[in-house]
Image 1 (cartoon, helix red, strand yellow):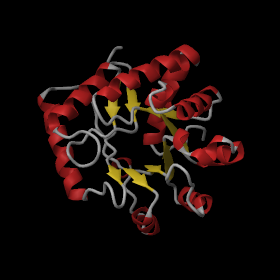
Image 2: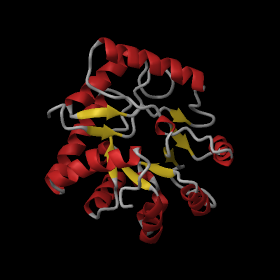
Image 3: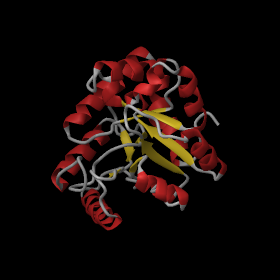
Image 4: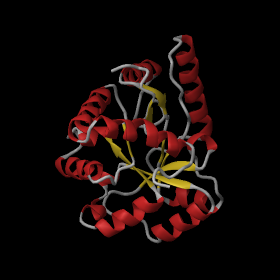
Length: 244
């Protein structure tokens, strides 16, 4: 695919040595170059902020981020790398929520969040209401993983009305489990998913992303591929709900 497609990857773990993503700069660059070759001109770095597992300091994140930017510049790659985070809804997130300090895409209105797979947070919709009232845009990472949503279309619709729903390309490819694939595909075909992202942790995930992109184009069409990878992600980065 051409690198001039202006695709936007809202979710990746390309920063080296700070979470369960890239272990070193060479791997980071292999991942970035692979995504560029798929047509991505914007790749958001979203390291985990997950209490008790992956909670790198902002200083460590900034250091890893600078190393990636310097290497990208030295190779003259045509790619922009906004900095954000994948925020687990835990006590650290809740503390930041109360002080409007949730790490967001380039310090803008939109921020990426994830939940524990088998349980949605207590009071979720009250907090989302407050966030939207403050002009924030919650972006739900891999909603296909959350079992409470699989058989609850009303909750899904309510969540999608105020949040941007971003499925993993690897799930669409069938590489993240049968149930996850089924629900991710359902969300795309029914127009519930607003965007799709690589959630790349390793170079192997680039192949999964390519397979997921091929699935979208085959089953939903070229227009859907552009909407999910270019038009809507650009709106999300600007803090706009894609259906707003």
